[in-house]
Image (cartoon, rainbow, N blue to C red; front, side, top):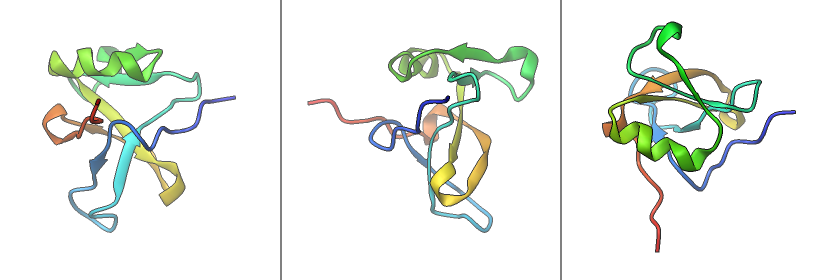
Length: 90
């Protein structure tokens, strides 16, 4: 069983195509992990256990796989840190 997508944390927007403007959230893979990578190649993937650890990887320049299952965007896109909005911590 995989964990659900957190819609209160990191998010981005689809930039082009039919889903333009729709929200994207960190994609939870079948193994319950998140994926960050400096490139699109699977050999460079880093699997991350918790969403809390994603910020440190993005600060290193790693991109994040993101999707929106509820909106039918099931194929995770690799999103650059500069396009990802972080949650506001108060």
